[in-house]
Image (cartoon, rainbow, N blue to C red):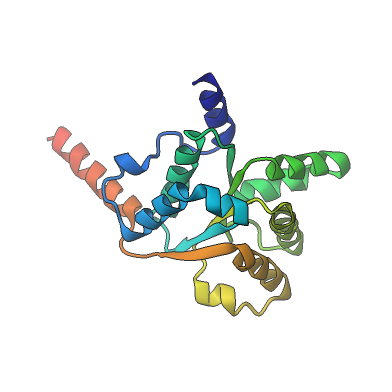
Length: 202
């Protein structure tokens, strides 16, 4: 139990995902069911180095699904790291030489790396180069990664920019795309919270 607690604290340093579970989901969407299938068949995916690309509009549950997978694997004592892509680029911008190498190595260690919100990082040649570094090195470790993004798959597959294409090609090489569609969970939760607040205020 203490080891599991340590794995959980290591996994979600910057993410409020420690309580996200498949069994506590309000609705088991088809996408969430696929994510659960990934966790249930983890041994095979891990052996093959296959991850997921969770794409779709803002608020459709991509990060939640990734967090549910993370928690399911942590309960099996697998190591996970869940980080925002913009945070990764920012950390690398502030680090140089051995510090940057050390940080990249820390991203390669976990059994599963979750890179949240691809495309939210700064749209600069430096940012794209750092994203490519992480994705490429992770691919070379043969360890799975899950990438979430608001970028449509059609844009990912038909990217014109060479730097973007290098990143996307690498991701699609080892990640199975799952589209998240439907209404925004964020908006429906916010609407529910506002209704509740209005009721409490009379």
